[in-house]
Amino acid sequence: MTPTLAQRLLTHPGTSTPRATDAHLRARDWAEIQERMLVPLYDAVHERLEVGAGTRLLGLGCGSGLALLMAATRGASVTGVEHLCPERLALARERLLPDGLWDDHTADARLMEGGAEAAVDVGRPPYNMITAFQPIGCMAGDSEGLAPLLERAAPLAERGTPVVLAGWGPPERCTTSSVLRVATRLADPLRSTGSWRPSERDDLEDVAQRAGLKPDGSGRVACPFGYADMDSAVRGLLSTGLFDAAVGATDARQVRKELTEALHPHLRRDGTVWMANVFRYLVARTR
Image (cartoon, rainbow, N blue to C red; front, side, top):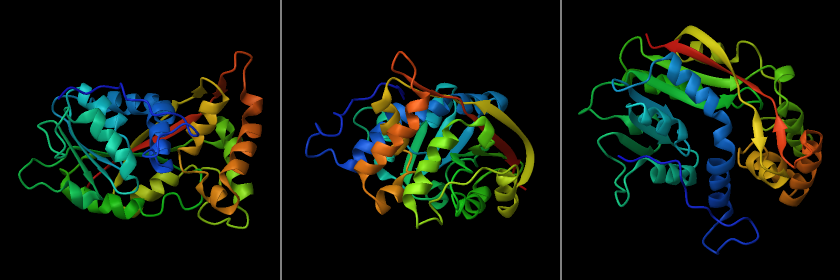
């Protein structure tokens, strides 16, 4: 396997080819702009758990595969499943699978669409690490479905396997919190599962306990959001999906306008956009 971070760039919205749908463009924006903001989180977890040649890693909600790629470069054997965004999964295949091989299986990487059940392979040893890196704790209901997913994944791993969950830090430590409130305001009156809410201290522990896992330590990591310009910042944040309810309640142009206004205080003299954030991770163990 020859993993690479380099990707083919698509044209920007407004100049895209007919084949480049909104979903594909947004997935590309996630992979090329936004996902790299979480690299310090991925790296801290891999370092703490000593990811290496003996690691058999299952990534739940693997998205476009950057965390898996980083683990693979450390020598880990990686499996990723993704059930929400096939466009991101397609980008993970570009990153992790050798050129010309599209059967989703190689000696070192497997990528499948679906949930934990898609990762079952009776011919392989059990997993000894599980990650769910999609951060929770900034939108109401954003942890729904995570505990059942972890419950289904746990039997695929050895007893005592570390399971890593990630979440936003306290709002006073996350500059982006003020920007995310735009999503709630524009989504009114749809203030239910799509509304912003501050993260709480025990969010990750609550999910772990509901999944039958035993909490075994946690950490905090600085993950600043830095963008080359305002357009990149808007595209990156829209790619997260956190503004989908707002777009549905108003329209994409209005959301972009108000998001740009909310980002203005974070625009620096050189044209870059910078927001300091802290993310938290929890290490739990299978029983």
